[in-house]
View (cartoon, rainbow, N blue to C red):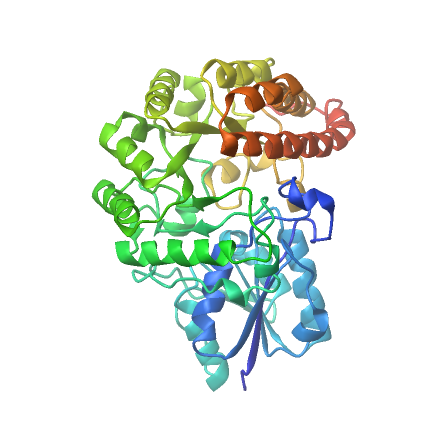
Amino acid sequence: MKIRKIRFIEPGERPYKTSLQNHFVYDRYIRTPSVGLNLLATIVKKKVKDTFMYSEAISKIVRSDVEDADVIVIGIFTFNANRGYKIADYFRHHTNAVVILGGLHASMNYKEASRHCDYVLVGEGDESILELLKALKKEEEITFPGVAFRKGKKLIFTGNRQPPQKIDTIPDRYLVYKYHDRVHYNTIWPQVHASRGCPHNCDYCALVRHFGRKVRTRPVENVIEDIKQSIEFFESGRFPRLLKGLWITDDNFFADREWAKSVLQGIIDSGIHYRFTIQARYEVGFDDEMLDLLKRAGFFELAMGIEFIGDKNFEAYHKKSTVKEIQRAVQNIRRHGLSVRGLFILGGDYDTPGVGKRLSDFVIKNHIQGVLIQSMYFVPGTPVYEQNRERLLHQNWSKYNGNVVHYPQNITPYQLQLEHIYASERIYSVKRMLRAFVRDDSIHKILFLGEFLWHRSVCADLKQELPYLKQQESLPKWKS
């Protein structure tokens, strides 16, 4: 077949629409487009000139432009899988395009995804996307690993593919429709992904199943160039940004300590003057040399995957942490002039009524600057999903976005949702917002205001699910 035109699509949980909320409320109608799908589009652009990407996180899809594409690639996570399938089904039945699904959810659940497309890219698609396009162009049989598809009723999976070792492509952000027009919104951030993989093996983590436990790093100079290009892209918009910050999105940036130090030193030596935030495990809180480098490089915050506030849950889900160690790490990070953002999970098997108060007490007592709270999430293919299928309330993937979707061991689904709402509203109370405006520096003032509004939006969504969850209390309780 001839391949002259390719379109990439990132579905939205909620399709983008113009709203004043886009200036203040993240993930209502706007959020940062997928770096991974943008990366694949960049790789393909080198082979097929007419390559472009739409992200419903920042714009509507121009249907007339997509309908005459030869190939359509759609990337999905669990929370936007339903929307992705709807888009795939539409273009599959209304166009002559080859429709390809990829991304975390499609990879982990390729049997389901294959019902909505011609081919599924399983795993990282950096190399397999080019091999698949080459095979389609030459009309050859698909035999190389990393692809799933159906022949009639038969599902064919060509096997898992070894992760790519060369991961130095810098995404061309100008390939994403309307992206540059939106960079003045403080609800979307420059993002750079500098490494892949994590050596740990937490039961609920889908990323380690997708990227593997072996850490692969990009060359230091390549990361620095990506950072420079990302900042330039965001700072060259029509209007100035109030919030000047870049997010390094690695799952475990500090896993290769010497490489991480080299990247931080590279930022310092390059003369980049910007504010950075990064994800981290608690262990970095005991590494004074690393914390000093982070501060000198312009980092203001560490987003720490704390997850639970009870040691039994850490043990149950194979996360090597203790509450006391985390508290000590947070204290030391703050001593170095860095703030901590806590990433929490509610609904572990050892959570009991009152967990919302205990979580908010922990946040306030330890001076954690901001939080992201989610109920236990279940991505197909993860141990926590496979071991607890019978406890799931449903498989409506659009609800797998922070809502309670399972029967917890020691608390009802309804009660757990109330605990989530309580913790969010207490942490982001009007009183604490006013205190932030008095005590915090400028970037934390802006962040707290945005998060205050965002959590109000999140809690409104959580409350809409309460009647359904209340009904589940009348059903027979799950028994271990």
